[in-house]
Every structure is written in structure tokens, then in C-alpha cells.
Image 1: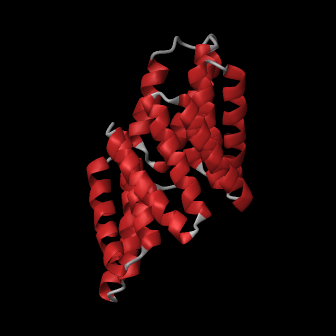
Image 2: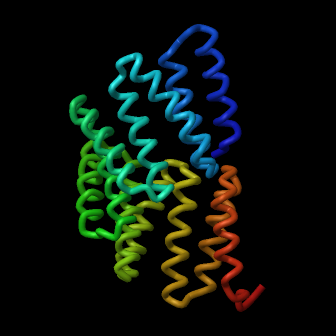
Length: 242
């Protein structure tokens, strides 16, 4: 639940890997530092780490590592709004994990391709990808993956204006994230539940959910998300009671 503590730990792994010339450890540390940078909102730093990790994985011939980094670069491309590049990265990642027979990797890439389709406005394709990902993660018993897919399906339901379905999906995701102790996941689900409450006209409930989300984002040090929650809260009318 602390980005700073995680970053410090992975930097120690990086230093040890360099000292012992352990290229696999170095590549893994770069990849994890990229995830932390992206969570903080520093996309340039994230790309730098992912690119370094990818170069090492290519030298090592690690298809699993390459698939992970192509997937990470695809996520950054989506955040930057480059949908074509995002699809290309995710398809490269998916092809590698299919070759390896990694259902866990495939589930992640299907989910990411769903995110690209969602961003593009192709909701039917997004649902198809999310359900493919969910089916794989259910078979594997991967609660973290399932939580992410339920949250994404909630986003589609939200876009359709199906508030009841959105709440159901967000709550399924929230239950899993609480079980896993994922503060970032819980914050994301609270933010979604708050958005549903807002569009239903219940500003007090929206405020409650967004305050919970803001607090969790603050705990993990995700400042851009904290700022977003504060912006949403500022747009609300004051609560009826103190």
C-alpha cells in the first residue's frame, strides 16, 4: 500500500542485480519501477523503465518478460491516447503469451485490449474482450484479475447508463479488492460507485464514496488520483449535514 516503500525495495533489487550481474533481476526491477512510475502518473519515466526492461528481456530471450513489457507499454500508449500503438503492443504481448501457453498473461492482454476498445467507443468489443479475460482468470482462480475485469464491465455498464448493473459489477470488484487488500483497486471501485451515485442524483452518497477513494489514493501516494478526487469533490454541493 505504499508506492515509496515499494520503489525503495525495487531500487535495492536493481542495485543488487547490478552488483551480481543478474540480468533477470535487473529486468524485473525495471519493469516494477515502471509500474510504480505509471501509478504515480509519470508516464515518461514509466516508458523509460519499461523500455530498459524490454531491451534486457530481448537479450535474454525471455518471451514472458517481453510479453509483460509490451503489455505495459500498451497501457502507457492508451493513457497517451495512441490507440493504434496500444493495440499493436497488446497484440504483440498476446501473441507471445499464446505461444507460451500463459493463460494468466493472455487474460491480462484481453483485458487491456478491452480497455482500448472501450476508449475507442466500441463497447460491444470491449465486453467481449473483458468476458474472455474474466473466463480465463476464473479458471485460474486469479482474484486480482477477476476484480479488474468486473470493474471494467462496470465501466461499460456505466457508459450504457445501466446503473444497477454498474453497481453490481463495482461491488463484486470491491469485494475482491478488499479481500486482496488492494488499496488502489478499492479506491478505483469507490470512485466508480461515487460516479454512479452522482449521476443518480445522490450527491451525499457520491461524496462519501469519493472521500473514501481520495483517502486510499493518498495512503498509497497516487497524487494525480488524489487531485482528481478533490476536483470531483469540489464540484459537489456541500453535504446536507456536517
